[in-house]
Figure 1 (cartoon, each protein chain N blue to C red):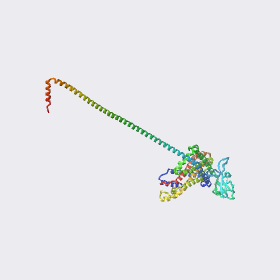
Figure 2: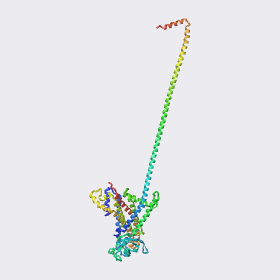
Figure 3: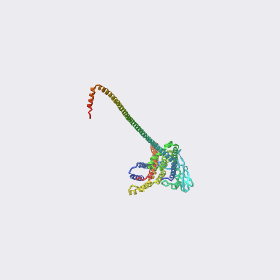
Figure 4: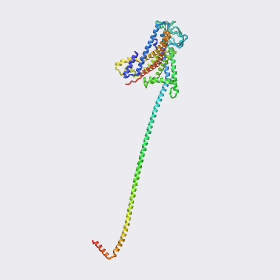
Length: 386
Length: 164
């Protein structure tokens, strides 16, 4: 549905211009690929859940393993040593009726089944599938309903814990600072602006964002205003996509987390809405150049489209990155599902293949998010050309 | 469902982190990098423009030189022509003058010759007259030495000198 309404807008725009814009065509191709990836991801998840139903609880459960890897966690698990998990403890910060409470995630002792109870600030905290719950007064252990939801515990009002995703996000911005502030200093040092060292690596990427994304999408006169945002979002998404692929970081799946993509998409939406000019709003509420019944017909579609655009951004990035992780993990799970090493070469070969594709996807997804954001800014600031 | 529900904690941290990242990179990274890149591009553009200008000037200079050379050649040509004309005129003038002079001299010579001739003629006449008188005197003297012939002559003369 999202894709269809977007296409209607594109179609209307093409009708109006009387030409077929190759850039929009290309984006539509990307959209089909994304859609395919979402289907693929759904297929994989359902595949994984079938496996679970087949075995019993004691056996290896690929779905649980995969979801635990893909989702957020309170501690940064690195590896197991002598069957003992080794992880970086991270602070758990919650806000409840009794105010702010903070304690180390190591106090859960790697438990995420609600068995270890941490008493802080007169409250009892448990970790149920990497979600902190506060036990109600008098309760000493967690009770679950049929769907495995706690019945005698509730989520804190606000859970602003430094989870592994937040931790990795901070690592990523530290790396970004290191790269780009060093690069910027390189230019200051040289008196004729010749890039050297890391600057010569960074410059083509920055120029790419400027010349291939911002300039064609927004236009020569207005692109400069959006450059900082586009550059930041491009490198922020890209580096977090890459970090998601590094095994020792245990698949901190930040860019495959809907909260992350939601935030970035929301920022794009806010910028688009606030930079919308008269022409942009006119195209939404009273499409020029078409008959009146068509105007009335297009208005609700355009209004939906206004929101669908950032939602599609959010889902695209989330689904692509999560799907990649799910596929790799599912392929590796085959070894444990079939309980034989014989399948290992196949698993490794396939997951290597997918990983190589994922390396490309990291850049492509960052590029798509950025170019679509730029396209929306371009639409919002486009002047009437009649 | 967990997977597709944005968690408020991560949303807050993402927002805070992203804004910090954006502000710091905008000030300390994007501005200097983009500034340097566009400065350099401006520099290259300027350099190309000035090279083009220099080429244009060079072309103009060559054209000027060509023009000046052409002019100089034309001037030389004109000067040579003038000189030739002047020479011809001078020669012609000299010739004319010489002719005139010669004519005058010839005239004078002729006049001198004429007057010399007249003087000579006059002298010759007087000589001839004296001579004639002498001859006539001698002839007459001889003729009149005989009486008969004297009378005859007188007769004849009288016959000739008819009284008219």
